[in-house]
Image (cartoon, rainbow, N blue to C red):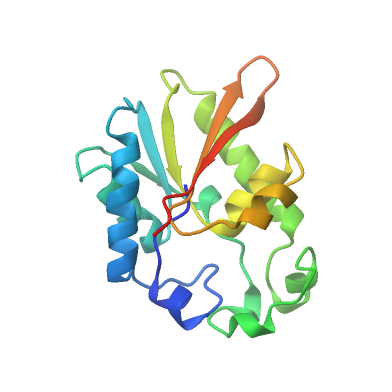
Length: 182
C-alpha cells in the first residue's frame, strides 16, 4: 500500500528518503483505506521507516496492531534531488539519480523484492500489510509484470496493491489494485 498524501505531495517536492507529514487529506485517505481492511484478518504489518508510511499504517490499523519498520520498504533515494521540485524529475529515472548519490530503479526493485520475500517466508505470514511508497510499489511490481497498465491508471495516495505470494515459486502475482478515489 502507498502512504497517504503528504505536504511534499501537495507542494510537488521529491520526497524519497526525506520525509514530510501527512496532510488532513492524507489522514482521511488512510481512514478510508482502513475500511478495506476491516474484514481482513492481518497476520502482520510492516512499514517503511518513513514517518509518512508508519503514520498511514497506524491510521489504517486504528493503532491496534503492532508493526515493524523496515528500511527495505523505503522509497527510492533521489540523492541531491531530495526535497527539490518534481519538475526536475527526468523522463527516464532508471539510472539518472546514481550520478547524484541516489539509487537506480533496479536497486530499488531488488531491495523491495528481497524485503517482501523475506517477510512472506516467515512463519505465520499469510495476510500481511506493508505500507510503502509509489516508486517502491511500482519497482516491486516491475519484478513480476510490466507496470505500464497500472501507471496509466495512476498510483494515488493510499492505493492498495493486493498480491498473492507463491511460496514454492517465490513469486508474487498482482490480483487487484484498489483505489479509493479521494
